[in-house]
Image (cartoon, rainbow, N blue to C red; front, side, top):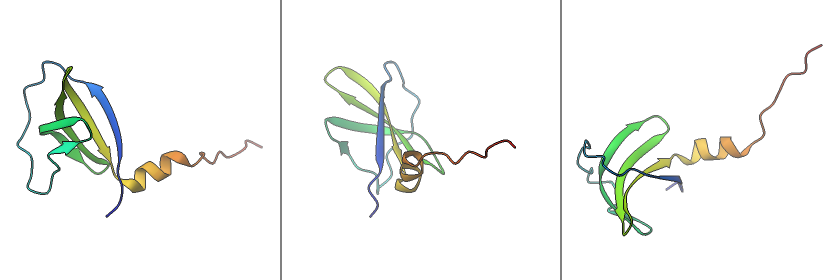
Length: 78
């Protein structure tokens, strides 16, 4: 299984989410996952919470995380 990357941001007041899927984790580190906010080709965004309130957690597929680490190849203008 590939290791995803995580991005976390505060999401206080978010209520519109879909239930977690059977394959979804129930916790990520200190965060309890409450549902899905969205999903697409890059990964899944979850609604979670910790002792400070709600958070949005984006799990990025390993393929995209590796691409982001590589420096962009730029074409030199002639």
